[in-house]
Image (tube, rainbow, N blue to C red; front, side, top):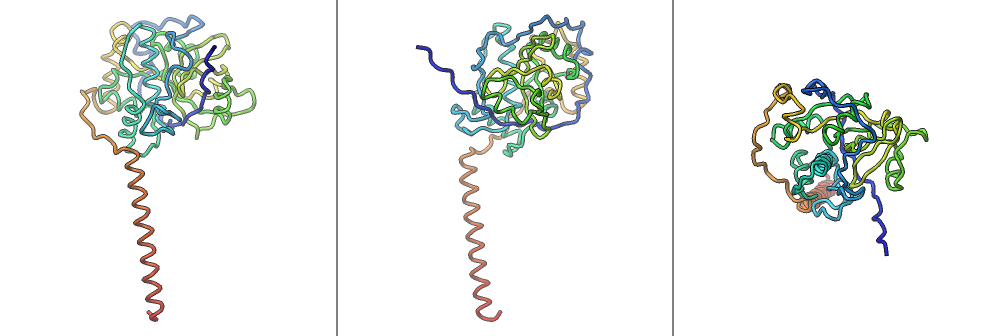
Length: 300
């Protein structure tokens, strides 16, 4: 008997709009021109459509810190990109758990769960030594995006979702603008491009623990920024790392060894503290009301 597939559940957003990062495009750092995409491009490396992991970016039973999810799509996207690259190169890695990613995100966001600017968090990871580097891709050029995806085994992307994105995702239907929906700048999200059919066919992305297709029209309307995350597999043969790192460091900071960081308080403790604060505030308000009543009664 075949076990039915788990239902697809849409998750949280968490990408903030940002000014374009002051770096040259990826192809300007390449040692040789990137090969043109050979369609269909598929860099999932054999990972099953539902095997990517929510990683805290929505309802996630594996996440004890925030089982209802947080807006850590930028952090989930980093791991999804790493998963695709490792699968393509046949590498075995130990992945961060949902709790570890959510904790890292909350440290970065000072416990606010306010989302991330992709250029800012990429610079932060570079300074902390979590990535070797990054470079933007011209998101308005589909062939350039697909060539980068093919060469670097994934593209780390920022999109503005449409109003029906959750419904289409949960139904397993491609994202599209054919029904009149338009990208909403308030619905910023980070996803990883993993496939492209070319010739006007569908694109494919990883988000919310699953593989999701979109029409080429949706990609054209909704994709607003794109990057490759540089790893050791990419450095020597593909990228002029000296030029790239010089430009990244000119933005501020260096790729130094990460320093230990304080861990955020457990969300459960934060909720208890918030409840106690509300109780104290309510008690103080009641005391003030009794004092005012006393003074009024005595004509004061």
